[in-house]
Image (cartoon, rainbow, N blue to C red; front, side):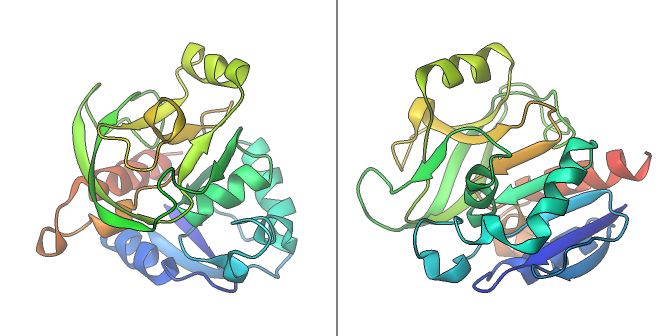
Length: 221
């Protein structure tokens, strides 16, 4: 499985996810946001960080980077796209996912492990978990509160596109949403960091389950 990790000015988790994907068995290529084209890829990752210093709105400037038009084209063609933390914000700002990610309800930066419910296993990202399984992943964000219009929330629920929910909802997200899928189910945005739960020595392996699932599933296409 060939994965591409895109680095933007201000990304700081790009190396982390590249190392974790490689450990899961992926061939990983590091890519730069200013490139208008991409090589053939099975998975595109927008990593965490603080692109462009979070000026304007988190992810708003990065969403207009040259590479994002190609990311949108690949997503429309069915290529898997994973946005983690700031990557989730970028995907929402680019219109590849519904809703918006705004400041936490408490207006404070939160950095700690959280418990999540796997809300759906009907995606290439979550099929390695059991339905309703509780997993632990870390979060680290000031702007992680997911919101969307009532009709969009109903659509997400009716179409089984809520990937993860917080059990304690630390940031006040609508319906405790921690991750959502795009309409084609091949795009996932999530605030928790799977790459930070990819080694038992550093706090757990629940995130590695997702990465290995991606490598196995996408490597067979």
